[in-house]
Length: 307
Length: 307
Image (cartoon, rainbow over all chains, first blue to last red; front, side, top):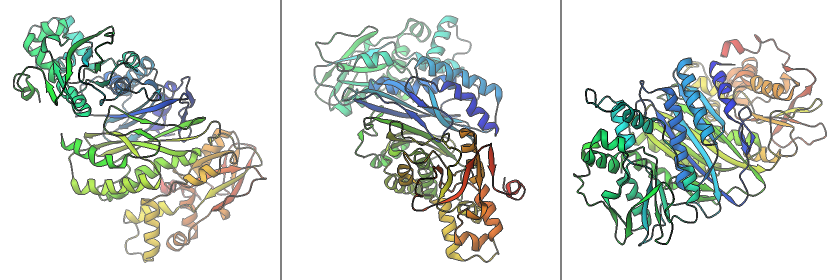
């Protein structure tokens, strides 16, 4: 048994689940998909130098690889089923691997995503996670169903992860920022929360849905393009956390909410007669036309500055 | 739209299929799994420097990444459903990508594996393929069901890909080997054939099954270990191709068949009263005990020499 086989065995303790018929150890895994449902599948890669650095805690790398992929399930209104992991490493670094497995385990349990298979190979450090979920046939949430007159809603708060990233990158050294605020903002970056329960609750209600991974403006434009309509967003309604406002100031906080990525909140559209789910707010409306209007010029959004 | 988004669009033409409800372009793909079946899933990575080199034609890289993953479906007796691809590249090399997409397209079509999603990111060159398939509930082929008295069978011929690899590596330069034989052997390496139809035909018949990816001895030992029995293999019965015997000689050909990898044939066990499927041969029997016996010492198998 090679050192890489040992790793595979190490991860195999994460492979049990009620819909897992066969986990790690054969040529493939076997899963039960509930009847009358569709299988929902998404693949996400995390690569050293692109998605994380040598300084990133491996626990965060593992947790986030799963959570960000799970967020795609949330955006579809899917219930988690299982996941596989392609892990490539230049060598076996026990300390790094220990942290990675801790982060993976935490996320696998939190999102009920048993790790049922994968491949561990030698090469530059990278993870590719494939998540599978399911939802009742015909009830999946798409980007393409927004209608004129719908309200535009979002969960949680936006911009936190983008400021957390700039903190991790050391861009605010020497500036006095409250420690608790820093901790909150960095945690929003490192331990994002995929909104699985909200996605499930939006089945049959939301006319469109997407997770905010690339920034509010960009992800709103995906809904606008896919639905053939215009999303008008009221900048004053965009939810901002107190730590973000305290750390970044009102104007910069708004810019980060509009153009910063990796918040993994859900952006969705609801017909006017629907109740607004707990933990979400109305930030705008769907109108005829195309594109996204937030009442600011591209320059004012800070788009050029942050990309 | 970034250059990497363009690539994703390029691959999106491969995403259609009768069980594909939603392909590339939303947060995730949606698939229909036939009722009363189990979902079969496997993930395989191909990494530059580990699985292929800068000299490997990208068409071969793409084809083989899919075919070798499809072979895991074959070994389970699964019918192909769909696949996703995590593709990491240092930069966008149009010529390389064109070849890759040709190879991917050829394999996707051949194996009826629509490419329904994935992630294209910047980083060291690597592919991670996740294949999904299905088989009727309870009919999947495992490694663990071999019984004493069963016959051990294998499809096709063994050792060809290993000699093909040594040809590609330039290890036989200056040695006179028939050109047609070289072409056949290199094609066995570069365009392996996943035995999907055989795997499906073995449902309800084979007591165990595995694909020969690591060499006959090693893969036979996986069946022996999982089934708690001993596999006795008659070396004279191991199927060898004429080109391999001509190129390598009898003794070396046998060694390659025993210890060379990447043939992707199916190794399986059948009860004594079963007909032997076309294109397969009996190479041994299942006995009480453990391990694999091929009548040769480890040294005679050439194991040390090739690993």
